Amino acid sequence: MKTVLCYGDSLTWGYDAETGGRHALNDRWPSALQASLGKDVHVIAEGLNGRTTAYDDYLADCDRNGARVLPTILQSHAPIDLVIILLGANDMKPTVHGTAVGALKGIQRLVKLVWHHDWPNVQAEAPEILIVAPPAICETANADFAGMFSGAIEQSSMLASLYADLADEMGCGFFDAGSVAKTTPLDGVHMDAENTRAVGRGLEPLARMMLGL
Image (tube, rainbow, N blue to C red; front, side, top):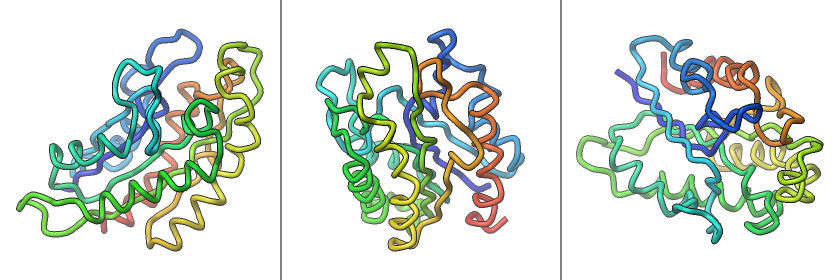
């Protein structure tokens, strides 16, 4: 059996902008990916609201720094065949970093952590890595989110091209979630259930190829 680790933020956790709750399990993109790949693949959803690539959020109630937490998660879920990283939206917050370049550097750090992790003896080599760019942040009338992500519309629109170049440079897979999904104007950041499912379905061909299926 192949194992896929989906490492992300609220887009992976399944935040529902309409209710402030969580999308049903079957509507989250890791679940849609699992359904597409079938029973011979184990898809692990590791999403946390507010998670960044590699930066501290000093207003958070738990550790949102993706680089600090990743090694523990890799160790706990080994052996892993493919790591899918969908992060960067929260880096767009001015209080976190506020730039696409900052998110790019964070993704680069995460890739290197996977490469150089001290894997347990159940894993002979580092897994494949698939970098996913989140869909661009859009305009919203939600004052809280508009303020929290001030300036993020322009910066987030740069992530896909920057991530694609990085993936090519580092020998990773790349997928632009914005090619199949868009964020909802309810808060400008998250996806509705239909778009969240679309990400999982869109990832299936590339994930299948990278797993050798």
